[in-house]
Image 1 (tube, rainbow, N blue to C red):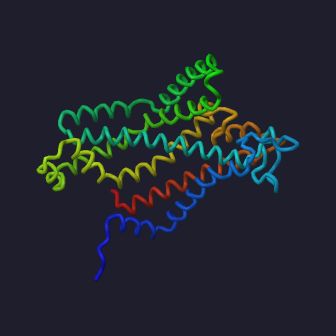
Image 2: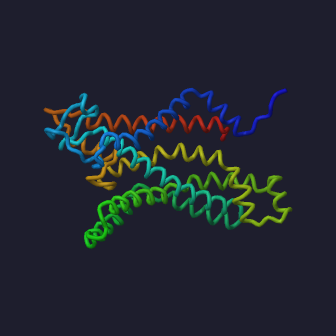
Image 3: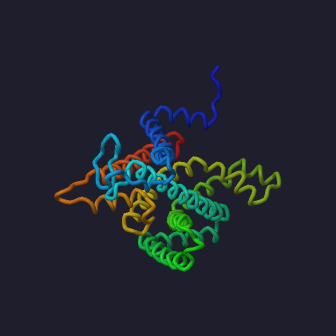
Length: 307
């Protein structure tokens, strides 16, 4: 007699059949672990990524420095994984904020329906028409400038660590506030199809209130589309965070991100001295992470049978 399987068990079984997605998921787990462990292991003195190599200067990859060193002799290996850790932190924070806003907005619009739904979704259409990239850059420039003034006036109280937290929080919030529109539309469509389902009618008959029906009975059934959306959107947010740092709008020295490393590496490339490792290692790691996230997202979409 065949044992009945739950939808979750069936999804896990379908995902395991996708060998490439499984390998990419393992590589992502290793990348996260390395971003946490490598900086600490390579810098046991607790100096973070600031340790200077003897004979400071640009050194190509070798036994002592597998990723080489930068222009002032800092070991590139811990700096690359430190940058990956920051990129992950910003991306995940932005995705969490985006999901919270998008799910709440889309769920309310879909559940209320009628004029409320029409008005709320027209607002989404208006926001879709705005130049998102320009707004992100403008917002970060303005608030970053305000933060610079604040820290300059109160340098004795607000330490460098607090300034670093301000920078990454600002980037995460701005990216999160500008990336929730698509998930709001997805959730709204799903809620419209589920709010007349039998289990919702049963909850109404049992006396459940609107908020309980919406967030206790309907929203949990949207887990599949939400997971797929988050996995497929995270690469775009990671790439945009790196772009902001590359353009000088992200974190600043002495802190580090993959975009900042790429910017520094490109500046060091010259006809007489290629210094290829400054770009190759952070660029390859970023590309590999983005590729793996997209493959895992496609695998989850197939496994969860999201259409």
